[in-house]
Image 1 (cartoon, rainbow, N blue to C red):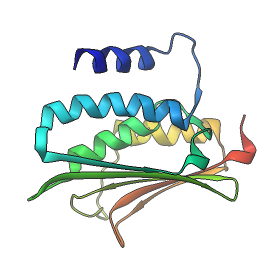
Image 2: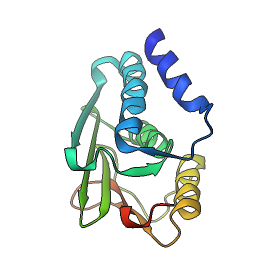
Image 3: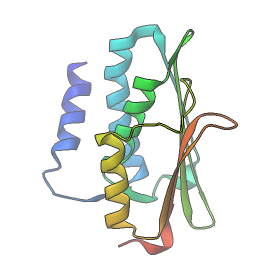
Image 4: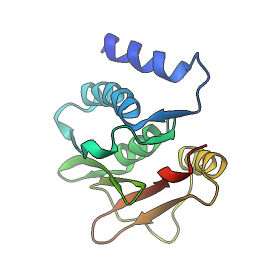
Length: 153
């Protein structure tokens, strides 16, 4: 856990002050975060990563995925535990990331917290009109993010 915390802290301190990273860099940081959460939740937390190799060098804002995965863990609990799945692929110049969780479907009264606000602000700042973020309840509950890789700043 100490090694995972150390690697996670090193990434989030961002000494080089970068605003963009690659998906592979984000996933490496995310895997350290998930190691910590798996220690915390033990067998209750199940995580599945399905990352297409064509997406590994796609660019996205630093620390974009972690708050979304944190929310998936926080709100993904059901009677069987917490199940989170992260998928990513590049299709027609678009990075497509989906974060699924096993919790209650999104409702019309969904509250947007700090994590989601920070994600939308980063996307708006770095990819104005070149991204989408959607909260889907059907067929499976997930957050869908698309980032146009042809319009990298």
